Length: 177
Image (cartoon, rainbow, N blue to C red; front, side, top):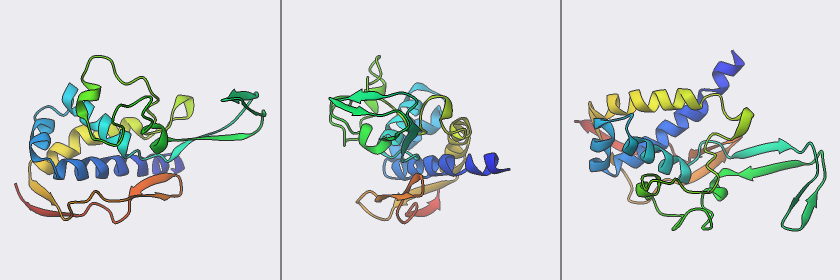
């Protein structure tokens, strides 16, 4: 039961961030819903979660010493890779603060780490659930209602325990599609 409950929050956060993005871009939402399993939809999901990852970071205890940038970190130390910062590293992502779907469509994906659900063998078990929900729930919602953002400013991302969430949730006006 714990596993099932723990795997639910990151997918719902990913879904919220995606609906928040698509609410402000109706043409992109239309194209996404036309082929939710297609290349464009995948790029929209990746770019949304690059800028708004559900997991705050990847936390690991080092089994052996690690040297990074001339600093030696001993075995047994806890290391954190913060997703939101890594995803905005200009060495890996050109114009890192901009939403640019095309960066995932240009043949070769960006070289930098992409860790919206963590990474490695201990990545979030909810990631496949998030993908299934996105491919099913987003078109189901957007085929029935039109979402319009209540603000021109993006919602602030805040940390709650180990996840990054919209500070006030998804703030949108809902009307029939």
